[in-house]
Image 1 (cartoon, rainbow, N blue to C red):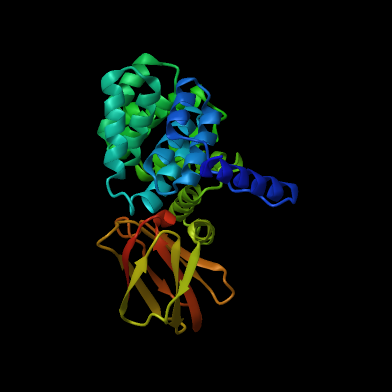
Image 2 (spheres, helix red, strand yellow; image 1 turned 120 degrees about the vertical axis):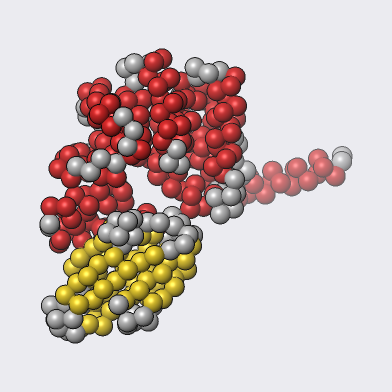
Length: 357
């Protein structure tokens, strides 16, 4: 008998013993990106999501697991989940593979060169362009998709969003968004994308609030939906409601809360990684005007909430100075407040500067 045969018998015997005694046996995953893509091609999108989830589990910083799961989620109409996965790509894949975006786009370009009318590739490629802020590139692909499938709500939805976010053919974009709702009136994912467009593209707080509320009430309690609701409440002048939603946004994206020394009339530089939020004490006197400004050379979007001594949200800031958080506030009483601040959605690695004037 060979040494290999003997080793196999020993391994099987050990596995049998562990199983018999209720001890879990670790086995290598049998999933693959190739199998996941085959499931997509077969139209078995739920199974593809499971397959690519397994791929991600085996290689948490790999590009293909996320790319494939995003594509499958889009084809299921799970646009919020798909965008959430692009946030995870930014948080965990890009720091390890800085060329992740280029890899995804190149893969779709190759697929479309071979099969220009491939609905699945057009869907994945257009959403990648949209997620990476290439709205004109997305529109070009979505024009083609809508021509091929004129009853596909995704095509109208993301084309309309791209038009509003880019400020390109805005009136047509409004029609696109309404068409998407007409084709999928009960989808919270559709309403979420519409609310995003009316918040960050063509500002319409009433419309954004209505669409985000629909998404929220139908199960999409995500950081971005809370941020959209917070933005709407800010526009309505409801400071308390806005602060509550922004506080929830920050809670949902935070996995590490780091307390700093008190911030006086100076500035501090904070090293952020995905999931990290800074808790900054602010010692104030009654009637004092507190001025806070955030900035960064690494990312252009910050968000913050101010809490009182009981931990209740007092005020919030999102996109107050360009896309940076900032505020001027008259302290009603002396004491120590706490400011929690991070990058929007908590997915960026970089340095954040917080100044108190």
